[in-house]
Length: 169
Length: 169
DNA sequence: TACGTACCTGACGTTGACGTAAAGGATGGG
DNA sequence: CCCATCCTTTACGTCAACGTCAGGTACGTA
Image (cartoon, rainbow over all chains, first blue to last red; front, side, top):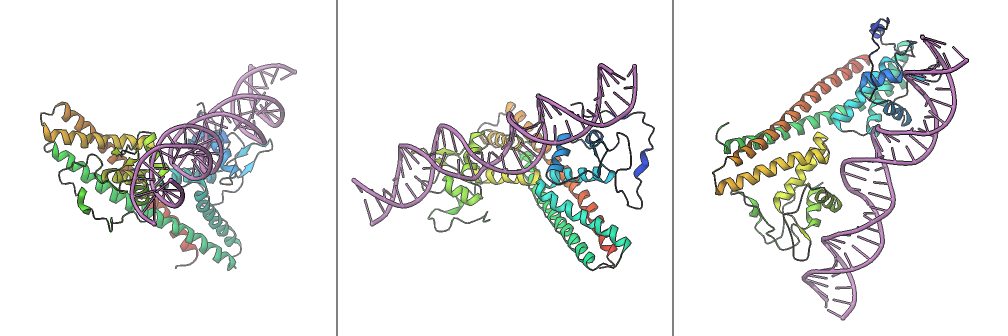
């Protein structure tokens, strides 16, 4: 219920993560930002759900604060949204979603270390696997899109038939 | 698997339900056709699932045979397929699906009795409600289609970025 | 220092959509 | 008549994805 309460009046500059370089590693902000509560509020999922995601190895927060509380970074938040989208749009279960999310994580990972040592070979292989995973996802999204299109057309036809029965419009 | 399989070998004329008049009432065939087993086989759902659908008032078989066994008609089979589609494509739960299915049922119902007494007024009202329900469904399908399109585009962009990192491919 | 709030880790409960036996009735063939 | 199949109802089991306490901890503040 009372999951949300906008942290109105916090003097923190909100654009901490303009992130044009793509570094977002570790927990930057020290305040309530990035806490499980604020992430829950921002994403619309419950705290329990966030803890559950961690339980099943789907989303481990970027860091823990000294006290032991979870600290999510901006990339984590986006990940949560991605997860929900894969649930709602594609109907994937968390197992399937983990496969996708893992692929993206490894891609980001390889990208980061490629930046420092572009001697990739092993790295290139891993990256190509990751890309392949994303392309598999892409094709299943496309397939669903197609089927949905057909379904919509059929539905339109049925609606038209019924409308016609009642005299035009 | 085999969603569509012609009733091969049965001496019954397969076009029993070409249904240009729209009558399909009661169980016509006396044999194993229309039995829960054959319907399960044809649709790919389990017998338990069919019984469950009846339990929750989602799909009541057209009739029972003297012995007490369920007898599904051709329209029932299509309904099963529609139900599965709404599950898989739209992610609806059985409650939501029932709303849709009920609307269609009432539309068919009104259509049949309108044929015999087109004094509709009450009937017209009901029909318009049904059509409205289908249009609501249509718009939610469209919405999902749109979101899926956006999702696909974003996914494509991410794939392209990663591909580019590996040198043009 | 006491309080309130937000967080923590278990651990058990819930809900939807079935799966899986158990025990028995109908029916057609040999 | 017996048997094999297919069907019936009743009832308990399962699994994912959380919900919901309970009991304890960290921390800013009046």
